[in-house]
Image (cartoon, rainbow, N blue to C red; front, side, top):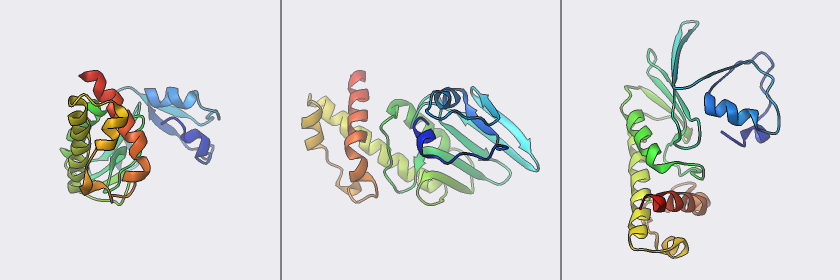
Length: 189
């Protein structure tokens, strides 16, 4: 997603980039121009590379614009990118919360042996289910505070999910995650 072009190392010249259309558009607008060969797709792409079948699916917006997850059905491995954080609260400042919850439903329904998250250790579907619970709790608490008619600063002060306060990243990203969720979810009211 946007911004990684500034910090990621250059890819080798012969590395092909495969991305969703929105991600490709975002990368084209970044500071450093990409010179690698690029394949981009709109909704999904299935391909066989060597003996490996790859199924890629793009979301419109969830964690960020143009999110992609990759499934290797023969191996039972799912790569979620930042659509899923395993026992970690990551950055949600570009998220679309109402769409992300649906994407998590899709991810948790995929028959998989191993799940490689955007943050945290490799896990299985149970990890996705734990993140779904956290995500629902976080969103529900913000909706509760919006329902009370609280403005952003008052809502932030009253926000309470003590069961997650020690989760790695929770405090570090709380302000940006809270504000993004509050502003988006308040528009729905």
